[in-house]
Length: 214
Image (cartoon, rainbow, N blue to C red; front, side, top):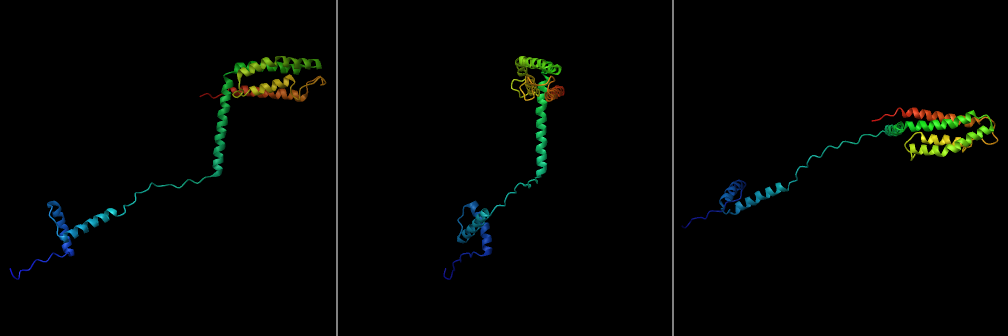
């Protein structure tokens, strides 16, 4: 018909875009092709969705980190010293128990050493001093074998080192040992040393009875 006007295409106004979004949903369900304005609305909606997908996600909370405790150098030294003292006591107790299990052997060795020492105590002449020294030298090899039987590696017993020292003095293998020109009495320093070593041995034998077994 003359004078009939063609319908103008719908303008993509804000209101039209809102309606276009509703039409977009209907079009997806029906498969209808959208006009240009609706396509623009679709692209706009897709852009909004893409922008939302590209938006930075909130960071996940990190676990709390506590600051390091302040260090006290003096307390650290004290703790180290206490631990070392504990370790030393544990080692000494181990050796006490080692000797406790061999008390019969210890007592036999101590009796032999005491017999040799008393020869020096009873000596009244150079001849008697020489005899005491020779007796120690004669018995030394057998005594050392018995000492080695107690602790072959000499790293467990508290006593075997003292036995060796005392036996060496009795054999005359120390600077204080009596010589051919010595007086009739054993030298005072040797007598004192023999008695000191005997006392140390007796104390360690008593300590072996204090073994604390698990």
